[in-house]
Amino acid sequence: MLGFGVTALMLVGSGALHYYLWIRLVRDTTRPSTRARRLGTWGVVFSALLAPGTRIVTPLFDPADGGAGRWLAWPGYTWIGVLLYLLLTLSVLEVPRTIAVRAWQRAGRQAEQASAPEPESAAEPESAPGRQPVLVAGAGAAGTPEVSGAPAGPTGPAVGNGSPAPAPDPRQATAAAGAEGDRLLGRRLVLGRAVGALAGATALGTVGHGMSVALGDPMVKRVPVTLSKVNARLAGLRIAVVSDIHLGPLLGRSHTERIVRMVNELEADLVAIVGDLADGTAAQLGPAARPLRGLETRYGSFFVTGNHEYLYDGVEDWLDEMRAVGVRPLVNERVEIRHDGAFLDLAGVEDLAGEESGRGPDLARALAGRDTGRPVVLLAHQPVFAQEAARHGVDLQLSGHTHGGQMFPLTAVTALSNPVSSGLGRVDDTTLYVTNGAGFFGPPVRVGAPADISVLELRAPVR
Picture 1 (cartoon, rainbow, N blue to C red):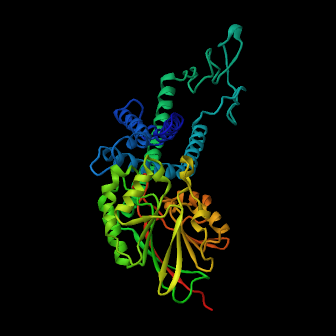
Picture 2: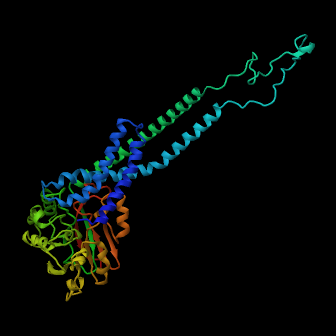
Picture 3: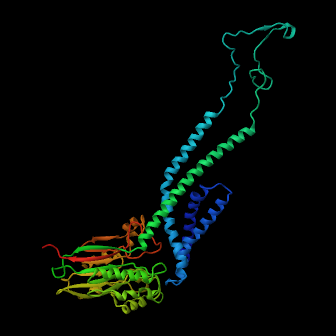
């Protein structure tokens, strides 16, 4: 369950983001007081509640296959993915949109200035060149001569026939202003609809592709790893690495069956499942995990907890479930692997999230009394634990947790918060490998970080 503060923050944040969405996709694309605007507004309100509501309400339902939670999870988490890419695309389009609006405003001002009437001169108009005033006898009082021409009328400057100029009609000015307003509104609608269409097409296309990647088969990565303590006899040992399966309302038993099939095709010597197996309790999702019983390996299958195993009551139930299907949990302990007469220590620690419940990793205990001449491979869910592993002389750490970022541009955020977010790297003298994971969390979307099952082949250094 999420706390009140987190829930309130999610609702406020969703409201702010969807208000921006309403401005760009509803206000800028529809005329005021129209049916289209009313429908668009209600659609945005519904979406603003759907996004946080999915995260808040879905955990209250049974996540097993066919559970009620999946009917909310599918549209809700999919919309969160669409929302991300709508906001990103609209943010990028703010620059050209602003340039276009200012260009139209500038053009409108210039057109106004060009069509404005010239101001009247205060001075009397000069007589036409070569024209002399004509005296008309008897026209004035006491025979005073008058000058013929175009005298100013009593109410304003005279026009050609000597009559006063008509006053401007206010109705014409109002009509002209209204026409100009309609033109500006029309331009804004064209621009708004173009921006909305481009943002919508980009978001839907990206999410559609990302869903096909997330829901399809994980890719297989084959990674050679050279370790200084690996000798010629141990070289060639193959470790299949699987992480972040995330069984739940969107991924069920068929997902596990697919992973087992793909791992068995790799013919690995051992299998390492490095956490975040499920988003629920063993009572709810144990049946979805039972196909793991079918894993076929030479030296066995091993499991360590991830942070999601501690989000629900009963981490011990999950450890028992793993033992029941023939997968051995490594709870701050190690096992000895003998391969062609050579030895490898395989250690595993609980996830850092377990510290909140009095559990957590104890690497010193896991490595106590071991032969330091042997290479040691550590299973630890979070890559940040590699700093501790390096202090204890671990040769290779296998991790997951990051999903590789799962969706661009979150890939960049993940890279900033982990020593390695995807693939092979080093932390001091410890080699660290991070898999993108075989499932997904939240939106059923992967962009720029495809799911994977990795098989690492140990190699000896060239002497």
